[in-house]
Image (tube, rainbow over all chains, first blue to last red; front, side, top):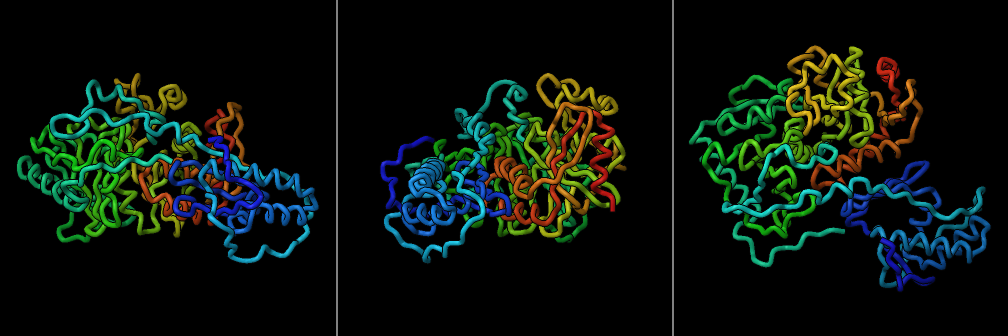
Length: 162
Length: 355
């Protein structure tokens, strides 16, 4: 992770990687999962709103301008925060850069928010990732199946697999 | 994202052909050493286990003893699992028509999982699981009985039951469940979060027990069904449950294995076949004596249930996510600060089962 995105700029547009990403919006957060990596995410309300706007086909700059007006914030501050958030979403392979702007709909009408703008926040839950590939496939025996040697009870049992 | 590479060579058998070849190998094994059938009552449906010989029974049946059902000729069988090993039957499994590069991170064999057939060779377990959804038939194979690791004995056929449940509202969940008067609390959380301590504290306080590690949940009806009668404890936690110490089935291997108690043998009166769920708790070990409950969000419960369940069970992450989302939205969710006073811990948990 931590990829630098040369292509990321004010005119960038995005799409949700819905082939391997699932999202569920709750009143206090959105839970997302990358089914390919097994990583789970908790996205705060500002992040969820930003993610929805970013993946609606509008350029990053338009999304930032929309949020800046809605939250009464400096558009440069908001654009920096949205750019950083988009970079994280790209790093986590939750979204991808779209080839061109294809908004599904116009941006929603501005509804003034009663809270100030705060940078979108996303927490990553990757505990399970450490358990993957701890036990790689061993050499195969004459039957063609992976063969182990030694006492079966000596095998690692990360979190006892259950 | 990790994606296993496809083999360059075209497989000699496709997924269905390999499944059929494995089924034929089981038939040969059964013809050599005899087929032994055991029926289970799983969530009110009949699951039939067919073993070639007896060598695997001792490793796979104890955890399921409480759901054994009388065999009935002509009964409607919802799932048939054919189990054999090569060492004691002298029947080989056909060579895998895939390469090592086709093993995915959770053992899914690339190119051998489609709308009908599932194929997983579980890494670290070395069990081949095959499932044909159309025939609702599965094959479970190991090279030799001693390949089956101890933890597999605590939740046998977990992967196959997961596949079988996909088109239904049922889902095997990495969670415990205890309760009373037919009402149950689902105890969520990854390994080490306090599931076993919480559920076994409840058992020792006289509550009914449906499982401490994996239960089968109807995510529409919000009902948990007991799958395994196993109680598992880390050895350094065993001393907190002195009454369980003499019941440990693997006392001679506790330097390498968690302690396992098969409760069907010792506490059958406390095993609940099903419990109607009243809430979900997410335990957190505090190290302080007192226990307490705090409301928590459905999102927090989903984060406690989904990652660990999806990690253990291959494929269908989208379906698991949807089922669990439905469940956490339907039930009150609580964070449980699990204290060191186990009687109080059980008493706090029991308040959630009061009508």
